[in-house]
Structure formats: structure tokens, C-alpha cells
Amino acid sequence: MPHTMADELALMEDPKKAAVTKGILTAGQVLDKLPVENVNSLETEGFRWKSLPSVSFNLPNENYTEGTGKIESIAWGVVRIGHDIDIDRIYDKTNHFVKPKTLYTEQTLEAINFTINDSLLNGDKAANPRGFDGYKKISSGLPARQVVDASLAKYGSTGTVLDISAGGASSAIRQGFFDALLRSKRVA
Image (tube, rainbow, N blue to C red):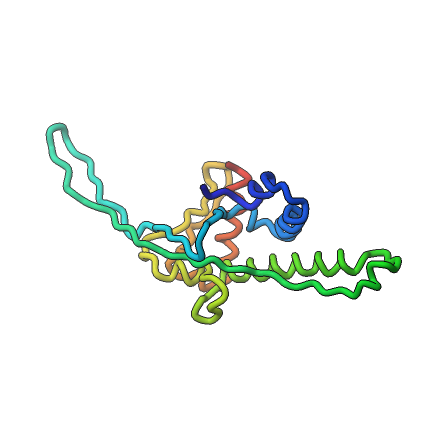
């Protein structure tokens, strides 16, 4: 069952895994909003709506017109991200205001967060087969009428409608998408 990395952190029993996950989540706000899922294979499959069925209003005793929605199957490969931290043992034995191992670990977690955030937007398996497809690539194949309603009028503020079929071509669209994503978690 999908849940967020923050939910995963609450369930972790291994303190080292929990510290790494907490470090990644502390560096940014996006990863604790997106769903994650544990899988037992190197690839997982999902579905997305391609089109909705047509619906209509009818009078009593009238028939509805048949209409079916379409979905498409999408496969996601499992990717790994990481870094080896190699420090001379002598630094562990000397006194430092900040231990080099701690400093390098924090830098690595920050770099992981930046790389994942960039890949969430700009990821393209054609350009980097070891990575994953990001928002731009995934949304480029969607029908034109699918948009993200970023309006928060029901919460007393105004917003905009983001056309995700454009693939997030401008920085304003990308920023608006993530602003709406972060606001939706706060106000819900």
C-alpha cells in the first residue's frame, strides 16, 4: 500500500535507516508528500487515466449513452541513489568541532535530495537510463484537457489552473505545481 516517506520513517526500526531517511526528508518538503511503495521486484506497474467516460443528465426512464473511460498501463523501474562516504580512520580519533563523517553524511543527504528533486521535474530515462522519468516527461503524453487545479478559492485564496500537458515547460508552471502540491497537504 502506498504511503509517504514520512510514514515509512515512523515505521522504521533500524536507527541508521531512520537517520538517513530523516536526513533526506529534512532537506526538502517534496519527498514527504509523494507516495512511496515497497515492491518485491525490479519493476512495478501502475495505471493512469487516459480519458474519462462521457456522462449526461437524463430525464426519468431515459437511457444513458454508453461511454467508457480509457486507462493506460505504465511501468516504473526501481532506481537506486546513493554515495560512498570514505573517510580516513584517523579523523574519527581526533577532536573536531564537527566530525568529518557527520559533515560528509549531511552533504550526501543534501545532494541526494537535490538530485531527486531535479529528477522529479526533469528526469528522462532516455538521457539517463539509471534514473527515472520526471514530471515533464510523464505529463508530455497526457491529453490536453488534463490540468491541475491549483485554485484554493474554497480556502479563501486564489490560484491558477496549471496545464500539465505542456510538460511544465516554464519555470512558473513547475513552481506552481509544487506550490499547489505543498499547499494541498497543509490545508487538507
